[in-house]
Image 1 (cartoon, rainbow, N blue to C red):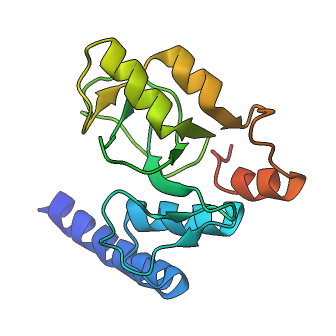
Image 2 (cartoon, one colour):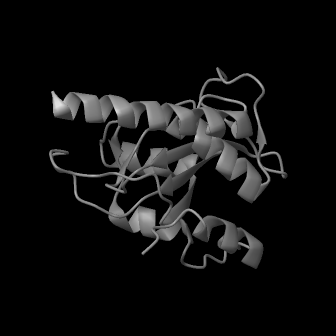
Length: 173
């Protein structure tokens, strides 16, 4: 009974925090909405007004469509669509192997950011005969080539301010 009471109290605290987050982002404080909001603030993405837009969360200033994902860990899986956006912007927590979640903690942190060219990722998966959809297995070298933070990527250069903003969401010692 003590564990149930403790969990109930922690959930009340979490609900208060979620309400404060929702007031800031003007959407429910779910990881997807939080990731969309963070990406819009850091990368200047214009978010779609209708959160039901299929496969497109927003647009970069140059007009490219983008789907934003926030994964608590990087396990080389990516949710993709055949008729997807121009790019996928993925915020992730630490790199980790696919394993049981028993005893694990998955804080919402941003240790790395990846920008994938959607057509290139889908073409690579097709060439390998892999499934395209939920939890598509993207090869590690494709993830590494798409990394724009913390590593510097000449194809998508981040400003010092963007790097500082992303660092606010990293693991704190």
